[in-house]
Length: 211
Image 1: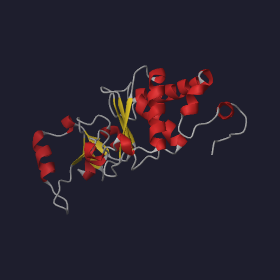
Image 2: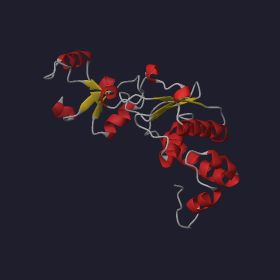
Image 3: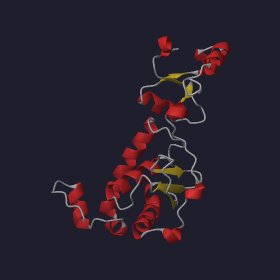
């Protein structure tokens, strides 16, 4: 196998659409289903490593993108900090303007998931993981919101898909225009900028970040 596919190889996991491209981005060669005969697949899967595990991992094993949330780690709304409340209100306020639908927010605190957030497009629910995201971080808040909103267009976790990164770019442009068209919206943003600062950020003047 190493002669044909190198030191790092995985099989494609069709249940996690984005994992194959993520695996390739990490230097793995993805072996497609028809590349080997059924007999060879069986033989390869039977080979164990020093831990007693199969040497053949799937793309989801090494680069998962579709992660199930642990709902036991959901943070009740009564425990939300002021920053969490502001960010949730801001996301829910901007969603109809940026992606033309209502969105609800929830928070989890789960360092096992390894994600900053996720977006359930069918339900219109955005989840933020406090283990990896600080709602006090203004720049990170905008980045995460645009990233998750892009999943409303691309209905899977293939972050390297052309549709996904083009949608993030488009949403960023819409957000910039919105700051000029409806500046009062951003008075409610977490750690918000006032409108003078927004103009400076979008223009050529010196950057002036709110403390």
